[in-house]
Figure 1 (cartoon, helix red, strand yellow):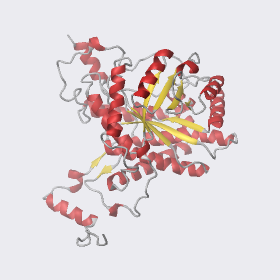
Figure 2 (cartoon, helix red, strand yellow):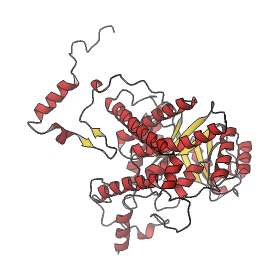
Figure 3 (cartoon, helix red, strand yellow):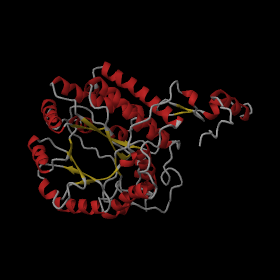
Length: 453
Protein backbone atom coordinates (compact mmCIF):
# COMPACT_ATOMS: atom_id res chain seq x y z
CA UNK A 1 0.00 0.00 0.00
CA UNK A 2 1.60 3.25 -1.16
CA UNK A 3 -1.24 5.70 -0.41
CA UNK A 4 -1.61 6.93 3.16
CA UNK A 5 -5.27 6.59 4.20
CA UNK A 6 -5.05 9.77 6.28
CA UNK A 7 -3.79 12.04 3.49
CA UNK A 8 -7.33 13.26 2.89
CA UNK A 9 -7.70 14.63 6.41
CA UNK A 10 -6.28 17.88 7.70
CA UNK A 11 -4.37 17.66 10.98
CA UNK A 12 -6.01 19.23 14.02
CA UNK A 13 -3.77 21.16 16.40
CA UNK A 14 -3.87 21.16 20.18
CA UNK A 15 -5.21 24.74 20.08
CA UNK A 16 -8.07 23.79 17.72
CA UNK A 17 -9.16 20.89 19.93
CA UNK A 18 -9.16 23.12 23.00
CA UNK A 19 -11.23 25.76 21.21
CA UNK A 20 -13.79 23.12 20.21
CA UNK A 21 -14.00 21.82 23.80
CA UNK A 22 -14.36 25.36 25.15
CA UNK A 23 -17.25 25.98 22.74
CA UNK A 24 -19.01 22.76 23.85
CA UNK A 25 -18.64 23.76 27.51
CA UNK A 26 -21.06 26.66 26.85
CA UNK A 27 -19.29 29.14 29.08
CA UNK A 28 -18.04 26.79 31.82
CA UNK A 29 -14.39 27.30 32.75
CA UNK A 30 -12.12 24.83 30.95
CA UNK A 31 -9.57 24.51 33.77
CA UNK A 32 -12.10 24.26 36.62
CA UNK A 33 -14.32 21.78 34.78
CA UNK A 34 -11.93 19.41 33.06
CA UNK A 35 -8.50 19.61 34.72
CA UNK A 36 -7.83 17.81 38.02
CA UNK A 37 -4.76 17.83 40.24
CA UNK A 38 -3.22 14.71 41.75
CA UNK A 39 -1.31 14.18 45.00
CA UNK A 40 1.83 14.25 42.86
CA UNK A 41 0.97 17.89 41.95
CA UNK A 42 0.34 16.92 38.34
CA UNK A 43 -2.49 18.57 36.40
CA UNK A 44 -4.35 15.94 34.38
CA UNK A 45 -5.81 17.35 31.18
CA UNK A 46 -8.89 16.07 29.29
CA UNK A 47 -6.81 15.24 26.22
CA UNK A 48 -3.17 15.01 25.15
CA UNK A 49 -1.64 15.88 21.80
CA UNK A 50 1.65 15.63 19.92
CA UNK A 51 1.96 19.39 20.38
CA UNK A 52 2.60 18.72 24.09
CA UNK A 53 6.09 17.50 23.18
CA UNK A 54 9.01 19.43 21.76
CA UNK A 55 10.37 16.11 20.54
CA UNK A 56 8.42 12.86 20.37
CA UNK A 57 9.59 10.36 23.04
CA UNK A 58 12.07 7.65 22.13
CA UNK A 59 10.98 4.04 21.79
CA UNK A 60 11.45 2.26 25.11
CA UNK A 61 13.54 -0.88 25.55
CA UNK A 62 11.00 -2.78 27.68
CA UNK A 63 10.40 -6.47 26.98
CA UNK A 64 6.79 -6.96 28.08
CA UNK A 65 6.64 -10.23 26.12
CA UNK A 66 9.15 -11.74 28.55
CA UNK A 67 7.62 -10.89 31.96
CA UNK A 68 7.75 -13.71 34.50
CA UNK A 69 5.09 -15.02 36.86
CA UNK A 70 6.55 -15.00 40.35
CA UNK A 71 5.48 -16.42 43.68
CA UNK A 72 6.73 -15.42 47.12
CA UNK A 73 7.13 -18.12 49.77
CA UNK A 74 8.02 -17.34 53.38
CA UNK A 75 10.10 -20.27 54.65
CA UNK A 76 8.64 -21.03 58.06
CA UNK A 77 8.78 -24.78 57.41
CA UNK A 78 11.43 -26.08 54.99
CA UNK A 79 9.58 -29.20 53.85
CA UNK A 80 6.26 -27.42 53.31
CA UNK A 81 7.97 -24.54 51.50
CA UNK A 82 9.78 -26.97 49.21
CA UNK A 83 6.53 -28.76 48.33
CA UNK A 84 4.81 -25.41 47.84
CA UNK A 85 7.53 -24.31 45.43
CA UNK A 86 7.37 -27.56 43.43
CA UNK A 87 3.57 -27.36 43.24
CA UNK A 88 3.73 -23.70 42.18
CA UNK A 89 6.26 -24.41 39.43
CA UNK A 90 4.05 -27.21 38.13
CA UNK A 91 1.19 -24.71 38.18
CA UNK A 92 2.97 -22.21 35.92
CA UNK A 93 5.23 -20.12 38.15
CA UNK A 94 8.48 -19.05 36.47
CA UNK A 95 10.23 -17.44 39.44
CA UNK A 96 10.19 -18.29 43.16
CA UNK A 97 11.04 -15.69 45.78
CA UNK A 98 11.99 -17.49 49.00
CA UNK A 99 12.00 -15.30 52.10
CA UNK A 100 14.64 -16.75 54.45
CA UNK A 101 14.10 -15.69 58.10
CA UNK A 102 17.31 -17.14 59.59
CA UNK A 103 20.49 -19.08 58.84
CA UNK A 104 18.84 -22.18 60.30
CA UNK A 105 17.12 -22.72 56.93
CA UNK A 106 18.86 -25.46 54.95
CA UNK A 107 19.10 -24.35 51.34
CA UNK A 108 19.99 -27.90 50.28
CA UNK A 109 16.71 -29.24 51.66
CA UNK A 110 14.73 -26.22 50.47
CA UNK A 111 15.68 -26.69 46.79
CA UNK A 112 15.39 -30.49 46.78
CA UNK A 113 13.76 -31.84 43.56
CA UNK A 114 13.56 -28.34 42.02
CA UNK A 115 14.91 -28.07 38.47
CA UNK A 116 17.28 -25.11 38.86
CA UNK A 117 17.52 -24.68 35.08
CA UNK A 118 13.76 -24.41 34.61
CA UNK A 119 12.97 -21.67 37.11
CA UNK A 120 14.55 -18.53 38.56
CA UNK A 121 15.17 -18.73 42.30
CA UNK A 122 15.48 -15.61 44.41
CA UNK A 123 16.39 -15.64 48.09
CA UNK A 124 15.43 -12.67 50.24
CA UNK A 125 17.53 -12.75 53.41
CA UNK A 126 16.15 -11.26 56.64
CA UNK A 127 19.52 -11.54 58.37
CA UNK A 128 23.18 -10.81 57.71
CA UNK A 129 25.63 -13.66 57.20
CA UNK A 130 28.46 -13.70 54.68
CA UNK A 131 29.04 -17.42 55.27
CA UNK A 132 25.40 -18.19 54.49
CA UNK A 133 25.39 -16.20 51.26
CA UNK A 134 28.59 -17.98 50.17
CA UNK A 135 26.99 -21.36 50.86
CA UNK A 136 23.87 -20.28 48.96
CA UNK A 137 25.91 -19.23 45.94
CA UNK A 138 27.72 -22.57 45.93
CA UNK A 139 24.46 -24.55 46.05
CA UNK A 140 22.54 -22.34 43.60
CA UNK A 141 25.07 -20.55 41.35
CA UNK A 142 22.33 -18.77 39.39
CA UNK A 143 20.49 -17.63 42.51
CA UNK A 144 19.39 -14.03 42.89
CA UNK A 145 20.21 -12.99 46.47
CA UNK A 146 18.20 -10.07 47.82
CA UNK A 147 19.91 -8.37 50.74
CA UNK A 148 19.10 -4.71 51.23
CA UNK A 149 20.60 -3.42 54.48
CA UNK A 150 19.50 0.17 53.83
CA UNK A 151 15.99 -1.13 53.23
CA UNK A 152 16.30 -2.99 56.54
CA UNK A 153 17.23 0.25 58.30
CA UNK A 154 14.33 2.16 56.74
CA UNK A 155 11.80 -0.57 57.58
CA UNK A 156 12.87 -1.54 61.10
CA UNK A 157 14.82 1.48 62.30
CA UNK A 158 17.96 -0.63 62.85
CA UNK A 159 20.77 -2.11 60.83
CA UNK A 160 21.13 -5.89 60.82
CA UNK A 161 24.32 -5.41 62.87
CA UNK A 162 25.85 -1.99 62.35
CA UNK A 163 26.45 0.53 59.57
CA UNK A 164 29.98 -0.68 58.87
CA UNK A 165 29.23 -4.42 59.13
CA UNK A 166 26.12 -4.15 56.97
CA UNK A 167 27.72 -2.14 54.19
CA UNK A 168 30.86 -4.29 54.25
CA UNK A 169 28.84 -7.51 53.86
CA UNK A 170 26.62 -5.91 51.22
CA UNK A 171 29.62 -4.74 49.21
CA UNK A 172 31.15 -8.21 49.37
CA UNK A 173 27.91 -9.80 48.13
CA UNK A 174 27.46 -7.21 45.37
CA UNK A 175 31.04 -7.65 44.19
CA UNK A 176 30.63 -11.44 44.10
CA UNK A 177 27.23 -11.51 42.38
CA UNK A 178 27.53 -8.28 40.37
CA UNK A 179 23.94 -7.63 41.44
CA UNK A 180 22.25 -5.00 43.58
CA UNK A 181 18.68 -5.34 44.89
CA UNK A 182 16.69 -2.31 46.06
CA UNK A 183 13.41 -2.62 47.97
CA UNK A 184 11.39 0.45 47.02
CA UNK A 185 7.99 -1.06 47.88
CA UNK A 186 8.31 0.13 51.49
CA UNK A 187 7.81 3.76 50.44
CA UNK A 188 4.62 3.08 48.49
CA UNK A 189 3.17 0.87 51.22
CA UNK A 190 4.04 3.54 53.78
CA UNK A 191 1.94 6.11 51.92
CA UNK A 192 4.47 8.03 49.80
CA UNK A 193 3.37 9.76 46.61
CA UNK A 194 4.72 8.39 43.34
CA UNK A 195 7.18 11.26 43.05
CA UNK A 196 8.48 10.55 46.56
CA UNK A 197 8.59 6.83 45.89
CA UNK A 198 10.70 7.29 42.76
CA UNK A 199 13.02 9.86 44.33
CA UNK A 200 13.54 7.87 47.54
CA UNK A 201 14.19 4.66 45.60
CA UNK A 202 16.78 6.44 43.47
CA UNK A 203 18.44 8.11 46.48
CA UNK A 204 18.39 4.74 48.30
CA UNK A 205 20.23 3.20 45.34
CA UNK A 206 22.70 6.05 45.15
CA UNK A 207 23.89 5.37 48.71
CA UNK A 208 25.08 1.92 47.58
CA UNK A 209 26.66 3.28 44.41
CA UNK A 210 28.54 5.95 46.36
CA UNK A 211 29.80 3.33 48.80
CA UNK A 212 30.84 0.93 46.04
CA UNK A 213 32.61 3.66 44.09
CA UNK A 214 34.45 4.79 47.21
CA UNK A 215 35.70 1.23 47.78
CA UNK A 216 36.98 1.06 44.18
CA UNK A 217 34.51 -1.70 43.25
CA UNK A 218 34.13 -2.60 39.58
CA UNK A 219 30.64 -1.39 38.63
CA UNK A 220 30.91 -1.95 34.89
CA UNK A 221 28.88 -5.18 34.88
CA UNK A 222 26.58 -4.37 37.80
CA UNK A 223 22.92 -5.36 37.34
CA UNK A 224 20.32 -3.56 39.44
CA UNK A 225 16.90 -4.91 40.41
CA UNK A 226 14.18 -2.67 41.82
CA UNK A 227 11.38 -4.21 43.88
CA UNK A 228 8.37 -1.89 43.82
CA UNK A 229 4.64 -1.90 44.56
CA UNK A 230 1.87 -0.56 42.34
CA UNK A 231 -1.60 0.69 43.24
CA UNK A 232 -4.84 1.08 41.31
CA UNK A 233 -4.14 4.49 39.72
CA UNK A 234 -3.90 2.60 36.45
CA UNK A 235 -2.22 4.94 33.96
CA UNK A 236 -0.10 6.67 36.60
CA UNK A 237 1.31 3.31 37.74
CA UNK A 238 2.20 2.43 34.15
CA UNK A 239 3.97 5.77 33.87
CA UNK A 240 5.69 5.31 37.26
CA UNK A 241 7.46 2.13 36.16
CA UNK A 242 8.49 3.75 32.90
CA UNK A 243 9.75 6.80 34.82
CA UNK A 244 11.83 4.53 37.07
CA UNK A 245 13.71 3.25 34.02
CA UNK A 246 14.26 6.81 32.80
CA UNK A 247 15.58 7.86 36.20
CA UNK A 248 17.84 4.82 36.49
CA UNK A 249 19.37 5.56 33.08
CA UNK A 250 20.04 9.11 34.22
CA UNK A 251 21.77 7.95 37.41
CA UNK A 252 23.59 5.01 35.82
CA UNK A 253 25.03 7.23 33.09
CA UNK A 254 26.73 9.33 35.79
CA UNK A 255 28.53 6.20 37.05
CA UNK A 256 29.03 4.87 33.50
CA UNK A 257 27.41 1.54 34.33
CA UNK A 258 24.72 -0.68 32.81
CA UNK A 259 21.78 1.52 31.79
CA UNK A 260 19.28 -1.33 31.92
CA UNK A 261 17.59 -2.45 35.11
CA UNK A 262 15.20 -5.18 36.24
CA UNK A 263 11.87 -4.24 37.83
CA UNK A 264 9.96 -6.72 39.98
CA UNK A 265 6.47 -5.69 41.03
CA UNK A 266 3.98 -6.64 43.75
CA UNK A 267 0.51 -5.08 44.18
CA UNK A 268 0.26 -2.51 46.95
CA UNK A 269 -0.96 -3.39 50.44
CA UNK A 270 -2.44 0.08 50.98
CA UNK A 271 -5.85 -0.60 49.43
CA UNK A 272 -6.40 -4.22 50.47
CA UNK A 273 -9.31 -4.89 52.82
CA UNK A 274 -10.57 -7.42 55.34
CA UNK A 275 -14.24 -6.88 54.52
CA UNK A 276 -15.57 -7.80 51.08
CA UNK A 277 -12.18 -9.40 50.54
CA UNK A 278 -13.01 -10.80 47.09
CA UNK A 279 -12.73 -7.27 45.70
CA UNK A 280 -9.01 -7.58 46.45
CA UNK A 281 -8.81 -9.90 43.44
CA UNK A 282 -10.17 -7.13 41.21
CA UNK A 283 -7.70 -4.64 42.63
CA UNK A 284 -4.69 -6.91 42.19
CA UNK A 285 -5.74 -7.79 38.63
CA UNK A 286 -5.70 -4.16 37.47
CA UNK A 287 -2.49 -3.55 39.41
CA UNK A 288 -0.81 -6.48 37.69
CA UNK A 289 -2.06 -5.19 34.34
CA UNK A 290 -0.40 -1.84 35.06
CA UNK A 291 2.80 -3.68 35.94
CA UNK A 292 2.86 -5.54 32.61
CA UNK A 293 2.06 -2.45 30.54
CA UNK A 294 4.64 -0.45 32.50
CA UNK A 295 7.35 -2.94 31.57
CA UNK A 296 7.82 -5.05 34.72
CA UNK A 297 10.20 -7.99 34.33
CA UNK A 298 8.52 -10.13 37.01
CA UNK A 299 5.26 -9.88 38.94
CA UNK A 300 4.49 -11.46 42.32
CA UNK A 301 0.75 -11.23 42.96
CA UNK A 302 -0.77 -10.90 46.44
CA UNK A 303 -3.33 -13.50 47.56
CA UNK A 304 -6.76 -11.92 48.05
CA UNK A 305 -6.85 -12.95 51.73
CA UNK A 306 -3.26 -12.20 52.70
CA UNK A 307 -4.40 -9.50 55.17
CA UNK A 308 -6.16 -11.87 57.56
CA UNK A 309 -5.40 -15.47 56.50
CA UNK A 310 -2.26 -17.54 56.82
CA UNK A 311 -0.73 -18.60 53.54
CA UNK A 312 -2.91 -21.27 51.95
CA UNK A 313 -2.91 -23.28 48.74
CA UNK A 314 -6.25 -22.04 47.41
CA UNK A 315 -5.48 -18.31 47.70
CA UNK A 316 -2.00 -18.83 46.21
CA UNK A 317 -3.50 -20.73 43.27
CA UNK A 318 -6.03 -17.97 42.58
CA UNK A 319 -3.28 -15.32 42.73
CA UNK A 320 -1.15 -17.38 40.35
CA UNK A 321 -4.09 -17.98 38.00
CA UNK A 322 -4.78 -14.26 37.76
CA UNK A 323 -1.32 -13.84 36.24
CA UNK A 324 -1.69 -16.91 34.05
CA UNK A 325 -4.96 -15.56 32.63
CA UNK A 326 -3.37 -12.18 31.92
CA UNK A 327 -0.45 -13.82 30.17
CA UNK A 328 -2.07 -16.65 28.24
CA UNK A 329 -5.74 -15.74 27.85
CA UNK A 330 -5.61 -11.95 27.73
CA UNK A 331 -2.53 -11.72 25.46
CA UNK A 332 -0.51 -9.54 27.82
CA UNK A 333 2.68 -11.10 26.48
CA UNK A 334 2.39 -10.18 22.80
CA UNK A 335 3.87 -6.66 22.59
CA UNK A 336 7.18 -5.54 24.04
CA UNK A 337 6.36 -1.85 24.53
CA UNK A 338 2.54 -1.58 24.63
CA UNK A 339 2.40 1.84 26.32
CA UNK A 340 4.80 3.58 23.93
CA UNK A 341 3.26 6.36 21.88
CA UNK A 342 0.34 7.13 24.19
CA UNK A 343 0.55 10.90 24.59
CA UNK A 344 -1.10 10.68 28.02
CA UNK A 345 1.27 8.04 29.39
CA UNK A 346 4.30 9.66 27.76
CA UNK A 347 3.37 12.99 29.37
CA UNK A 348 2.87 11.40 32.80
CA UNK A 349 6.19 9.57 32.46
CA UNK A 350 7.99 12.80 31.65
CA UNK A 351 6.37 14.76 34.51
CA UNK A 352 6.96 12.05 37.12
CA UNK A 353 10.58 11.73 36.00
CA UNK A 354 11.23 15.46 36.17
CA UNK A 355 9.58 15.94 39.58
CA UNK A 356 11.30 12.87 41.06
CA UNK A 357 14.68 13.94 39.71
CA UNK A 358 14.26 17.38 41.28
CA UNK A 359 13.41 15.81 44.66
CA UNK A 360 16.34 13.40 44.32
CA UNK A 361 18.73 16.31 43.73
CA UNK A 362 17.35 18.07 46.81
CA UNK A 363 18.01 14.95 48.90
CA UNK A 364 21.57 14.70 47.62
CA UNK A 365 22.17 18.40 48.20
CA UNK A 366 20.97 17.92 51.80
CA UNK A 367 23.51 15.20 52.55
CA UNK A 368 21.99 12.12 50.94
CA UNK A 369 19.37 9.51 51.75
CA UNK A 370 20.93 8.06 54.92
CA UNK A 371 21.35 11.51 56.44
CA UNK A 372 17.75 12.40 55.62
CA UNK A 373 16.62 9.12 57.23
CA UNK A 374 18.67 9.88 60.33
CA UNK A 375 17.16 13.36 60.59
CA UNK A 376 13.66 11.88 60.13
CA UNK A 377 12.94 14.01 57.06
CA UNK A 378 12.04 11.08 54.80
CA UNK A 379 9.75 9.57 57.45
CA UNK A 380 8.03 12.92 58.08
CA UNK A 381 7.37 13.53 54.39
CA UNK A 382 5.92 10.04 53.91
CA UNK A 383 3.70 10.42 56.99
CA UNK A 384 2.41 13.73 55.66
CA UNK A 385 1.54 12.15 52.31
CA UNK A 386 -0.05 9.13 54.03
CA UNK A 387 -2.12 11.41 56.29
CA UNK A 388 -3.38 13.35 53.26
CA UNK A 389 -4.36 10.13 51.50
CA UNK A 390 -6.00 8.83 54.68
CA UNK A 391 -8.08 12.02 54.90
CA UNK A 392 -9.16 11.54 51.29
CA UNK A 393 -10.26 7.99 52.12
CA UNK A 394 -12.08 9.05 55.28
CA UNK A 395 -13.90 11.79 53.33
CA UNK A 396 -14.89 9.38 50.56
CA UNK A 397 -12.68 10.98 47.91
CA UNK A 398 -10.76 7.70 47.69
CA UNK A 399 -13.17 4.77 47.43
CA UNK A 400 -12.65 1.15 48.41
CA UNK A 401 -15.71 -0.78 47.35
CA UNK A 402 -17.26 -2.82 50.16
CA UNK A 403 -15.41 -0.80 52.79
CA UNK A 404 -16.22 2.91 52.60
CA UNK A 405 -18.64 2.55 49.66
CA UNK A 406 -21.55 0.08 49.51
CA UNK A 407 -20.42 -2.00 52.49
CA UNK A 408 -22.22 -5.29 53.07
CA UNK A 409 -23.69 -5.02 56.57
CA UNK A 410 -24.09 -8.81 56.68
CA UNK A 411 -20.36 -9.37 56.17
CA UNK A 412 -18.92 -10.75 59.43
CA UNK A 413 -15.16 -11.27 59.78
CA UNK A 414 -14.39 -11.48 63.49
CA UNK A 415 -14.24 -15.29 63.48
CA UNK A 416 -12.32 -15.47 60.18
CA UNK A 417 -9.10 -13.80 61.31
CA UNK A 418 -6.06 -16.09 61.37
CA UNK A 419 -3.73 -13.10 61.47
CA UNK A 420 -3.88 -9.74 63.19
CA UNK A 421 -4.66 -7.48 60.20
CA UNK A 422 -3.53 -4.13 61.64
CA UNK A 423 -0.25 -2.34 62.32
CA UNK A 424 1.46 -3.97 65.29
CA UNK A 425 2.97 -1.58 67.81
CA UNK A 426 5.97 -3.11 69.57
CA UNK A 427 7.99 -0.58 71.62
CA UNK A 428 11.73 -1.11 71.15
CA UNK A 429 14.90 0.88 70.85
CA UNK A 430 15.77 1.95 67.30
CA UNK A 431 18.49 4.08 65.71
CA UNK A 432 15.95 5.96 63.59
CA UNK A 433 12.19 6.14 63.26
CA UNK A 434 11.09 3.28 60.95
CA UNK A 435 8.81 3.76 57.96
CA UNK A 436 5.57 1.98 58.85
CA UNK A 437 3.48 0.21 56.22
CA UNK A 438 -0.25 0.70 56.80
CA UNK A 439 -3.56 0.17 55.03
CA UNK A 440 -6.16 2.88 54.40
CA UNK A 441 -9.07 0.87 55.79
CA UNK A 442 -7.55 -0.15 59.14
CA UNK A 443 -9.37 2.35 61.38
CA UNK A 444 -12.73 1.66 59.74
CA UNK A 445 -12.22 -2.11 59.99
CA UNK A 446 -11.31 -1.91 63.68
CA UNK A 447 -14.62 -0.19 64.37
CA UNK A 448 -16.61 -2.70 62.32
CA UNK A 449 -14.97 -5.66 64.05
CA UNK A 450 -15.62 -4.06 67.43
CA UNK A 451 -19.32 -3.58 66.61
CA UNK A 452 -19.93 -7.04 65.15
CA UNK A 453 -22.65 -9.00 66.98
